[in-house]
Amino acid sequence: MAGLNSIAEGHKKNPFKRSRWNIGLWILVVTYLFYSIGSLGLNAERFLSGIGHASTLLDRMFPPNFERWELLLSGLVESLEIAMISSVSGIFLSLFIGILAARNLMPPWVSVPIRGFVALCRSFHPVIIAILFVKSVGFGALAGILTLIIASIGFIAKLFAEAIEEISFKQVEAIRATGANFSSVVIYAVMPQVFSRFIGFATYQFDSNLRNSTMVGIVGAGGLGGTLFSAFQRFDYDFVAAILITIISLILVWEFLSTLVRRVF
Amino acid sequence: MSSVRKLLQVKELKKEYVSGNPVLKGVDFSIEEAGLVAIIGPSGTGKSTLLRCINRLIDSTEGQIIVNDVDICQTKGRSLRKLRRQLAMVFQEYNLVERLSVMENVLSGRLGYMSTWQAWRRNYTQQDINSAYELLGSVGLAEHATKRADSLSGGQRQRVGIARAVMQNPSIILADEPTSSLDPKTAVEIMELLEKFSLEKNIPVLINMHDVNLAKRFATRIIGMSNGYVIYDGQPKGITDDHLKEIYGGESWLD
Image (cartoon, rainbow over the protein chains, first blue to last red):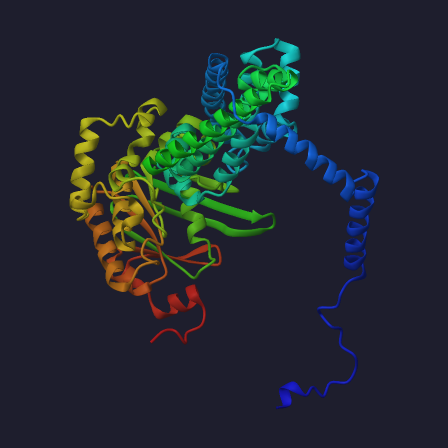
């Protein structure tokens, strides 16, 4: 029993002692939370009156109105086209940008600027990029496509570069030792190790582009979002409901298809 | 000028990973003829470093490594890749591309002879494909050609690794601890395979190993390394307990 009855003299420090910094930080976070609620004027009364508005909106939304289905369909088709074009080109570009951004394959003078570019692509929400493109290339689908290409690069190129940085370098060394050139090494030793993950990122990005393609229209970059926004502004809430139902079914159909795609790979 | 053509000549080779702390302190030897050359020595004495320097997977600090009358330390780009084709590597952990098939792994030994476009389209010549099948047969894995490399056992993977090396049509095979991850029986089989290719194709095989007995059994020549220097170079039967004591230090492990 000697082990548990220490005979050592003196006061040993408890290794799990709470730090004052830790407690202070928590107090700070909670205080700021309450301050924010107060300064934005959030209270129960405001919430209840909001709920009232929501129920009027819902009343006017039902039954959904599909009378203008031609307008709906043309918006939907445009959204799909935007999603398709931007995903294919964005994913294709990301393949190369991702390789250039991988720190284990590229010297810093290549990977650092490329990573900076990718970070830039990620730093803005697609809505902000869409506004910039609408201002610079004009209203319509082209602005939407460019927006979603940038969004795809920001997401896939980054994840793809990280996937490459985690590969086993032994396989790379073995292929390099055969005298293969750099691009053959990438094709034979790098791609086999990361390709299935790349397909995963790509299907996820197509999913995200599909959703976003119905959104960029709100700022005038083409697709179903434009139709949705003008329906809101004209208080055609039953048509709004029809558009929302269409978007939901679009996403569900893709969800079903993407499970099939994943099964193939 | 010596009358014998030297396939590989290592002169005064030095390598420092950290400046002022050399791992190789001046290694000299040359390879003139086919056969198994075992490099023995304790861990950390620079055996792997030596082999990896020869193939330029790492760069040496000083000295010369002459292959085909060219100092590989001074080459780069295309000419370096051309020399690498002749210096095939076999690795301790096999280093197969796990998600590719066995056949693709064997054929990847030809990549040094192909353009990227050909590599991308898997456009191997009929002759390459025939010899790949022949090689897979001779390492006893013909029926595994279409399996994924990571579905094989350790010994089978090393056979594929050897087939890939021979596929390069090398003038020398460099094997870095090829049997250290394997059980004793499989280790002997791998050594027999290397011996067989060395004789059949008339290629010298330079093998790093820990196991002195395995080295004595198979090698036609032993190079003993210790502390960054070569301290024995000659016939396996010429190596004595005194040499081994000098190479590995201590004597309690000798029986």
